[in-house]
Structure formats: structure tokens, C-alpha cells
Picture 1 (tube, rainbow, N blue to C red):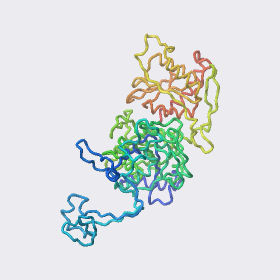
Picture 2: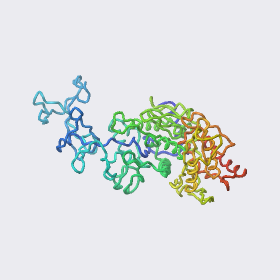
Picture 3: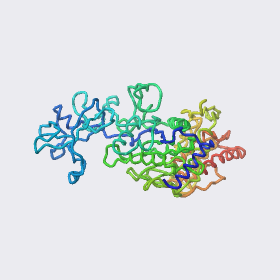
Picture 4: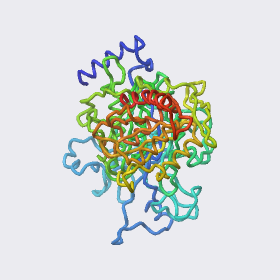
Length: 580
């Protein structure tokens, strides 16, 4: 343990006693970590089960062979024994050079002859020395040949389903929660349970129980039976039956993590999600969850079962990051916000972005840090952010109002619509999540030097959609770097959106290395050095706090007083974008 870790641990103990941070469980000998399953998560996905050659041989089915006609070696899959069984394992086969030093070993448990008969003493020179091992169901998972076949007796050949088959006839490859993954990591020598204890939560899971599950069989943390679940409603996976997560699930993410970390039982949280979207959840949780504890997010670029699958290593690194306490400041509180611990790097949730679909493919955007430290030689922090996050975020869930006035337009007239943001328990309501559209700038699009907002039919349609259907809504426009420049026609069209009550954020495209300069003379919120996708999340949160902008009675002919009122509200938004 580093001196920093020792000091942080001592300070945290004091902070606990002084009430500066949530108290952990009374038994501090072993930390407990909350593990949340997110959507479309390759890190929780497996290669489809394939009927082994053992099964094919037993049931008279054609063997799996390579292109030269040689039988393939079975890939054993982790399974559970139904009853105790004794197996005889040939000595000196765990390593090619064990037999070279056989004199260093204790005697065998017995011998097995060519017919497979066991005896305590050798009866023939060809008898093999063996270990006699009794395997029991309570031992946990063992790697064994997969014997499963289809209902018609045919083998499973490496696919979860057959082309054109309905989802109900498909095998799922995503696990319903991370408990099975942790058990397999333990069996693979990861020592995961020596580091901490874990509770597993199905926040926005990738796999689901389509037939339901009795409470007694649950492996996640929760009460009661799990009712039958539906793809695209209760769980979200990719593949031939793609069902991406929906916007209201952003509320569910926050509520699950917020409630767990406020319980006082945990040393931190892991969030597992698909590699394209985990960067968004990481930032969202960093903005919304009010906690002084660490949140570490993980993904994987390779399915479990592939050679060099990267997910397990990322999980172990996140656990080491949490228990090391390198994230803690002198007051014991998390100084880094949510992070992604990925490929032995500790990334800022605000800046991390998937650059390419391979291990090591994440990058830090913005040009000013974005990497907090390294896991290569153990958790080590080199960079601490100044941005607000988690416990000091201005848009964390505990700072959002219980309700706010939204805005809708009907037949050209505006009306105020009350929107409930949180329930009586302080949980974020799914229906409260604002609708924020994203638009791409194109300075080569205008046909003449004169702005023609009437020609921006796409922007006009977006404005109509937002104003007519969503009481809480906004727009992010991505322009040229670093000025967030869009065409004059686009800017004019977006100004009409602002005058109609829709907050509009302007960001720079690409890596956003330059900070977008705040311009108090325009009607836009400058997005600092956020990417458009991250700016959409911050705007989503800010709208729930500040609500729509004041609208002009006639957006096409706004008065100076109306413009001044709009700019005053924009200042509130701008401050959040400058500090988060």
C-alpha cells in the first residue's frame, strides 16, 4: 500500500466518525462492492454453447472437425455437478516439467491400469500414478464437456438461434447478472473473492428471465419473484434480436446506484455496460449520483470465451481501484467522480470515448487530461480533476427539484405543463427524462451568402417535434472545432428554437481539444470542450433542474425584454457547462 493509500484510509476513518462520508458496514475487515449490470454488455456476454464431441460421440452425431477432417478438441464449459464423483488425475500432467522433478513430490494416491481400474499399489509397469479426487456439487463450477442438444436431438453448432427463428426459440448469451461471471473469474484463479464481497444488481440488464424466476433462485439483490421479462422492456441486448436501452432507463440507472450507495453497506460500485455506450453511463452517473464513494465502469471488446477476452481483467482492476482508496481525497471523499477502469488505465467519465473496437481502443477527448492514472503497477493517480461530480455536482439527483414547469406548444400557443421530476422517495421518474436532439453542423450547406433558416426543414421539424410532444426538451448542435460554428442558416433556425423556449448547446466536433469560448451576446449555451454526446447528457440533467427557457410570445419577433430574460436563464445553464 502506498503512503497516499495509508493516509487516505486513516483520514477516511476519521471522516466516517465525523459524519463527513457515509458509514460502511460495521465489519471493515472486508469491503463489500455493489455490482450493477448495464445494457448491451459484451463484458457479460458469452460465446454460444456448442455441443461437445463427447456428446456427439455418445449420441451418435457427426463429430466437429477442422477443414482437414481432424476432430476438434472440446472446449469445456463451466457447469455444476449434480452428485459427488471421484476422478483419477494422472500425476505430473499439470506442467510439462513436473515429471522432471518427481522426486520432490509426495507418493500418488494410487494407480490406474490400461483398463481404467484403480488400485493402491502398481500391478503392471504400465500403470499410471494418479491423484484420486472427490468432486462435490458444493465445490462450485467445474469445466466439463457441454452435453446439451436441441429438442429434436440435433447438436447446437455455435449459434444462439437459427436464422429466422423468433426470440422465444433463441438461447440468450448474456448472463442476467454478474454473479456468474465473478464465480468463473474465481475458478479461473482471479482471486476475486479474496479482494471483497459483492452484491449484484440488475439495473438495466442485458439478459432476462422470459419465464420469470422464483425468489429463492435469485442470484441478484432484490426481493420477491422476478415476473416474466420482455426483451426491450426489462432487458437490453444486441445481436439478431437487438434491443437497445431506452431513454427512461437513465432514471433507473441513477435510482439503482443512488439507493445502493446511500445504504452505507458498500465501499464503492462497479457498472458493467456495452463498450459503445458505457462512456455515456459513466458520465451520467458522475453527474447524477450523490455519493462520496467511487464508481468504476467497465466494458469489454471481446466476448467471454474468446482468446484474450479483456472483460475479466478490467473487472479485477476496478475492484483493486476501489479497495485501494487512491480515489479518496484528504477528507475521505471521492475526488475523481465516476471513472472508467479500462485496459489498465483510469479514465475520467467526462472525457472517455470509444475510439475503436479493440482492447486499448478508448481515448480521452478534450485535450486537457482525461486520464487520471494507471493500473499497470497497481492503482496510481497522476491527475485530479477540477470539474464538479457526484457529491458536489450541481445536477445530482438530490439537488433536482421534485417538480418543475415544462413547456408545450399547441396550435402556435405555448402553455405551461407541470412535470414531476422525482417521487416522494426522491427517486428520479422515467417520464421526467428530457428529450434532447442532436444536430450536425455543415458550413458548406448554404446556397448563398444570405442566411435562409426557412431552408432548414430538418431543424424546423425537430423543433416542432420537441415543442409539440416533450415538455422538457433541448437541442445540441455540433459545429466546427473549436468555435462550434454552424452555417448561418442553421444558427438562425436554432435561434428560433431558443426563442421558443428550447435550450440549445453548441459544441465542437471531433476531439473537442479547444474550449468553446462563451459568447454572452448570442442565445446559445457553449459546450466548453464536451463532445456532443456528453453535452447531451449534461443538458438532459440541467433541464431537469432549470426547466425550459422563457419563450417569446412571438418567437419570430422577440422583444428586447424577452431576449434579456432568456439570456438570464442561459447564464444558469452556462455556469453548469463551465464547471461540470
